[in-house]
Length: 235
Image (cartoon, rainbow, N blue to C red; front, side, top):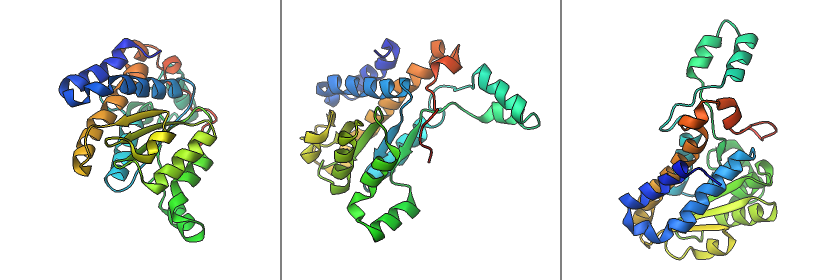
């Protein structure tokens, strides 16, 4: 169960965007699913097309470094840096930040173009989910229509291998609805207006996760509170 202060991010979102009030329960569920994934050493995979591809990059940027809160390294990690590289340890400790592991599947240009050329362009996201994902991870699949073929294939692969699917879509959810463990379908049908609502939603989810692991209570013992990255696939 996520901390109340983390889930407050969802309540604050709805206060600012009353049109999302009917989505409160799935938004809570999405925040808790992401937090539980990180608590168990998992990672977030994100994909989408066009503006949603830009959103995937944006989300990864908010999670992989400090967003609203400081993410100081814990004592154990600071000590390791001091022992391993004493000349640069101070600089590294001052600037490195704890991360919530997230991978945007849209920025692997060499892999994406090679796979599209050699195999199938609409399976580029699915291939990365297959290669990078593991049971317990979460796929955040973004499609304003809910019908983007490459996003649907990625969701199918995720569901097959025990990766939870959170779908961020427009009204109705399209075909992605049937593949989603949690559907976040905003109440609009116009692409740009859907995207305008997607941004505050994923900001709220990032805020919730950051508060859970790097809030004032958690930061007191950063090494114990932050999710482990041992055994995780790296970009």
